[in-house]
Image (cartoon, rainbow, N blue to C red; front, side):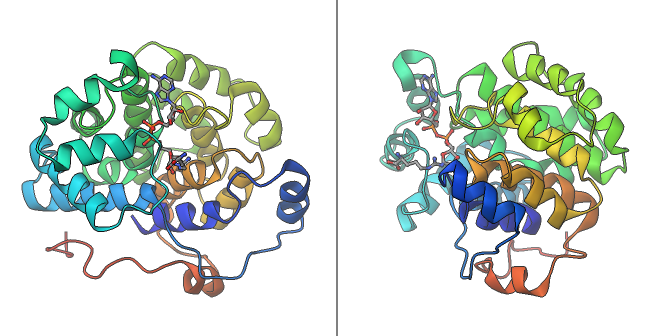
Length: 289
Ligand code: F2R
């Protein structure tokens, strides 16, 4: 959870900056002064974690209520555009399944919001990949009805679980792709396996897509490649991920969640930890879990 938040807050400092200034600042590693506020990626991941703590699984009605409550209490966390309507309607008592299925003319959202929150769930159930997949789908359903959003959530949760289990970076992307249903996310993950882990992230981003659409397909495969390429070093992973620009808070939140599932916050400079907006304490009612 803390790796996801660090990635989210670090990434937000680079969010959709013009390519010229972004590239120079990142190559020269000009860290922005704190505080670095976290965004909806963290808010929704926290809600999900609380539900896992309380119910031991994704209780979808409880998760919908938790999301809506967190939104009502603090709506200015840069939520995706459609989430304002979704979370307000759920808060007003409409059934979540009706609300999410009517988004985008009945197509449902293919945004990356179901993927951005789910790495801690993957770590939570890391011992059992079938449960990781099933619970990631249940979490996605509550806000995102499009199958590509679900596929993105499955990919991130499985990647985090495999990270906990110690998989080598060179095997991660293929192992994740094997668990993701056919579609654009799966196809771009397979494309990402063609690039050496030493490749320039900007090149990989150009070939698999990187956040310009805020879709799961345009975010998750690139983020999983970045995590695979830097699976032992959280700080390096975040610098590398941000280099391609786009929806950086979310690509970095995904990468931070996956890599920190292996490394924790080891090696993260004290200045980063001091800059990052703190999480509520305790995170959950039973923080020993
Ligand atoms: N980009 C942001 N936040 C700023 C948004 C500002 C917004 N203009 C505002 O007024 O508040 N970051 C956050 O958004 C991403 C997560 O998004 P999520 O939760 O998936 O939201 P949404 O709205 O469902 O999807 C995002 C956009 O994707 C496009 N889209 C999705 N499904 C579509 C479909 N079926 N057809 C067409 N377009 C679809 C829309 O443009 C959505 O707005 C994260 O980056 C989070 O940090």
